[in-house]
Structures are given as structure tokens and as C-alpha cells.
Length: 150
Image (tube, rainbow, N blue to C red; front, side, top):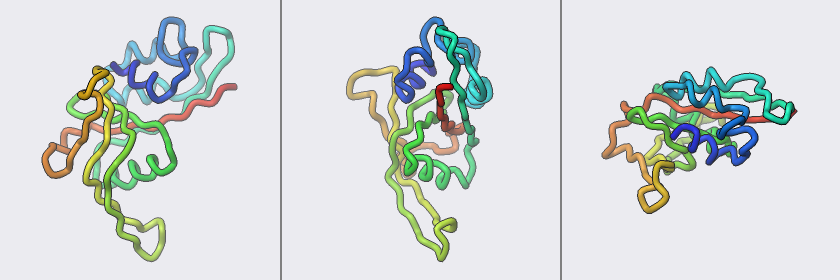
């Protein structure tokens, strides 16, 4: 399912994630999002001989996660989130913001995270992680990534 989640956010079959793609080995051998982030970081050679440079950032669950998630969403960065040992595409959030004197001091309170569960193609595909009813401590972390062809 990690391969399908990556395909959803990258939309480039040469890069991800089928047979002979640039990410095939990394995706098949990763057991967690943290491990996947480490394996994807750096240069990958594609089957046509061209290469891509991948930048990833993995963030474990911590109190600063809300700020990092919201910033990545505002910057329209593709993200994957690991919750209860499953990987989801994180595509949106319902949140409150409190402005401080400096924009770097903004505080965010996330109410809901909007996720895609790529295992499904019906109404079960879109899910919400609700701060009031779901166990946010079960979030292992999230990852952002960018891919540049060279």
C-alpha cells in the first residue's frame, strides 16, 4: 500500500513505483514511513538511464507536528502520514490558527486531518482523523517529499 500512496502523490510511473521504476527497491524493502524516508532520500536512476533527486523529511509525532503539517499543506507539499502502522495520503486539515506578533510564532490547533486510504476506491477512501474522537498518539509520523528530474 505504500507504493500506491506514493503513486497517488507523485503521479509519475517512471519514478514510482512499479517494476523497473526508480523507487521499486526502496518501496519494497521499507517497513515503516521513517525507513522509507531514509531510503528515498538522494539520487535514483530510472530505467531509461535518467535520474531524479529526491528530498524527504520525516517528522515523528510530537507537539510541533501541527505547525509542520499545516506549513507543508499551505506549501502544497505531498505528504504521507503513518497512523496505526498504516500509511495514508495527507491532503488537508481543518485547523484553527492563533497569530502571534511574528508569523513564525503562529500557533495551530488541528481539528481534523483529511486522509486518503489508498486501499479503497469507494466511500471508504476518504477518511478523517478527528482530534476529539481518534487516538492521535497512534500517529507514528509523517513525511514530505519532492522529486526533481536531473
